[in-house]
Image 1 (cartoon, helix red, strand yellow):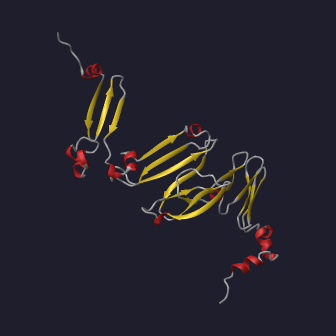
Image 2 (image 1 turned 90 degrees about the vertical axis):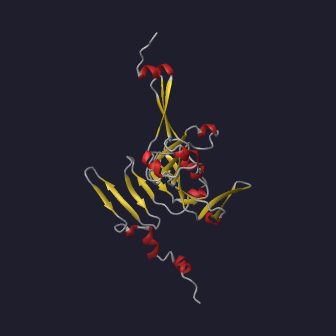
Image 3 (image 1 turned 180 degrees about the vertical axis):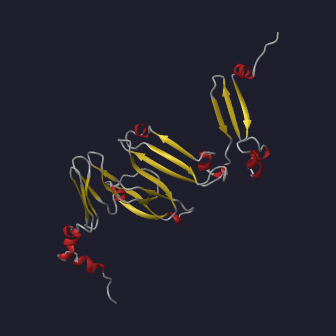
Length: 274
C-alpha cells in the first residue's frame, strides 16, 4: 500500500523535526572556534518544529573561557533576568530584582564582546528603589553590622584585592511625598556588592536638593544645599519664576554671610601658617 505524504504531513506524523543550521557561515569560517566547535564549524544552532506548529531555536554551546556572562547572553544584544518572587521567597526581606546583561559590541562584530551588568530593585509601588551598575576598581564602601545593630562603614580599595574586583555604583535614596513626587534624591555611592542596600549611612550621604510642591502637585520651590533657593508662583494664566540669583537677598546663604555666621567655618578652612 502506498501513501502520499507531503512534507508538512510527514513532519506532523513524526511529531517533530530537528534541523541544524549556521547563523553566520562566513564569519564562522573566519573565526577560530574552540574545542569540538572547531571540528564542526557549520553547526552552531538548532531549530525544532513541533507537531503543534511551535518553533524552538536552540543556540549552540558557549566556550567556558568566554565567561559565564557571555554564555548567559549568547548572541543577544541584551538580556533581562527577572526575579519577581524574590520578596515572597525571602519572607519579605528582599525586594524584587531584575538583572540586565548588555553587550558592548554586537555578536556579529565580536562574539566574545565584554558585557555590562546592572541590577534594579523595585519597591512596593513597582518603582525602582535602587539601581547598581558595574564600575572600574577603586575605593568602595563596605558595611559591617556590629553587635547591637551598630553599622560601621569601611572603604575598601577593590583594585588592591587579589584578583582586583569591580565596584558597583549604587543610586542614593529617593524620598517621595504622599503624592509620589520626589522631595529628595541623595548622591550615588560606590559599593563592594551588587546586592540591595538600605542603610542610611550608605544611601543617605552627601547633599541633596529639597523640593516643595503645592496641593495640586506643582513644583513651587527648590532649596539648594548652599542655602539659596528657586521659587515659582502659579497664577490662573501665568507662571512667575525667580532663580537663585533673584532670591539671593532672601536666602539663608546671604543671611549667614551678611551677619557673619560662618566666621568659624572660614577660619577652620584656612590652612595653618608655617
